Length: 150
Image (cartoon, rainbow, N blue to C red; front, side, top):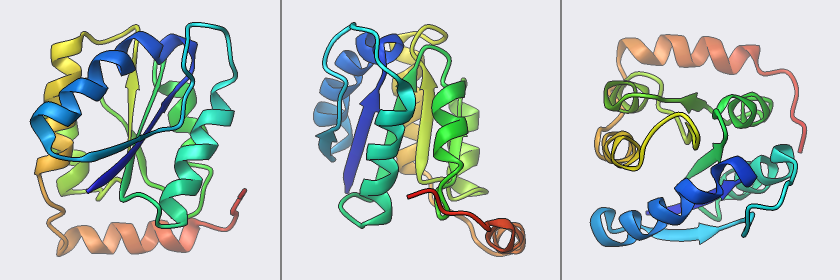
């Protein structure tokens, strides 16, 4: 599995811990789309890179990190075909995979600790979409997607 990851300045420190975790424990290929320091940047620029990578099939899924995760999730969900979920708990990480088939995980770099982030990511990556009754909701969601801001 190929995972795109990106952050703004508020997510930089957490991303620096997530990348080694992903390489060591989750057996995924990581493509880092920045940013590469604590310098102030604009989160929509980095969310766009990850969403475009997913939509062009360069990667399978993406992780976006900003201070709260809120800004990244707002931007990501503007893209047709992106289902971004802001998760603060491992249970949410599991459920967004099982029920929402999310392809982007958003995290708050100043809201959760390293180990909580690792557990959330583990659940998001290792639980599979259940389909069935959840397909009904996802089909309704697809019909609501009327804009693509690529």
